[in-house]
Image 1 (cartoon, helix red, strand yellow):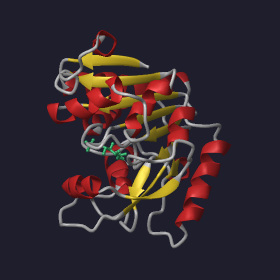
Image 2: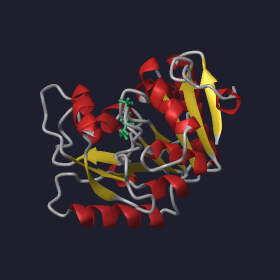
Image 3: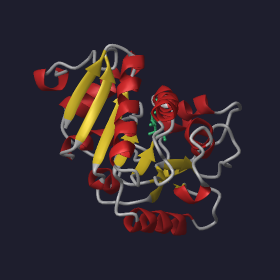
Length: 248
Ligand code: F6R
């Protein structure tokens, strides 16, 4: 694991966008798995800008959804579907056959998980996974206490995730379950970028990077990945105390 600390969210986002563009430029048929949320929003808009300016071809990439709120329609602005469509797929003109997202409205969610596991396997695994970190240390919807040896699965969301998740929705929304790739997908991805910005993430980032590696704080598992990079802005890095985690 490598830790990179940037002056601010703009600089962090520009470097994260460079990682995605670089991956696709090197490997045009890359399999990408991208988180949604406030953290990567700017990164994706810079990916779109850079891809257009540098004429990077995304037509052979595959996009794998990291997670989704169970029972929430893709048309709902708070859904992960909507976010990715709006910020990545539409501006980059990604074709439907390139996109594999969880159908969180399915009556057979276990079947959805199996399907996603098969897609990831058939595509030869994930080349680049970009994740955020929740206020409770989750990655995707891998909540504290998750089993480390799982692929895609359905989870009961933590109280905190249900509350914090309201920020994505226009109206108060009942959020009870999530469907997500598992920590095994994270550990098996070729490269993982974990992004965090803002002082509100400082304490959970410190715990993930400096306390024990435990599924009680799922994001700490990133330290077990040899080719992972934690990208922080200075406020998110402000609680770090150790030299190795403070490295630039
Ligand atoms: C979203 C996801 C979540 C978020 C995390 C941080 O697809 O997987 O784990 O990455 O909750 O969210 P923000 O970036 O909104 O702070």
